[in-house]
Image (cartoon, rainbow, N blue to C red; front, side, top):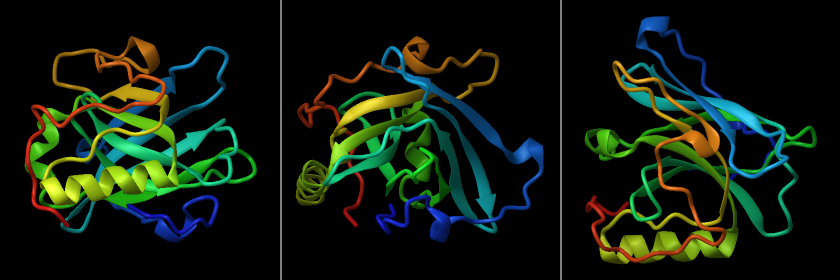
Length: 184
């Protein structure tokens, strides 16, 4: 993921030339009542590299020591952070995050895209624990947006209507049942 702090992910933006047939679009909706946050996450390719293009709006400014995290998500125990960044002054966060080749075979285990607001310290701790245990990191932070990844023949949902587990306000959780992946 990226933590360049440029406010809008501009330095991580990637232009793709994929046709619409190669794109999978995930509509993201708010989980908390009264939020105007919304967005899209688009699975695409830039050459041989799978990427997730993120286009979010209506986000609240992150507090000191906090960052937004974009997750491949199934539950608090089965999640993978793809990007970390701050929203700009207008509440927008855009950019592209590469999907590591080691994660591509695990993509069917993730049914949603989740965006959480988390403390940088909490996130760093989760990543360190995952690296030591050679597992996926635990989901961290307060989920603000979520959308179901479309499956053939199914109608995807966004926000609280998605079929992914709803995250607790301060998501923790054990490592039970997490698939292992090489530490990076």
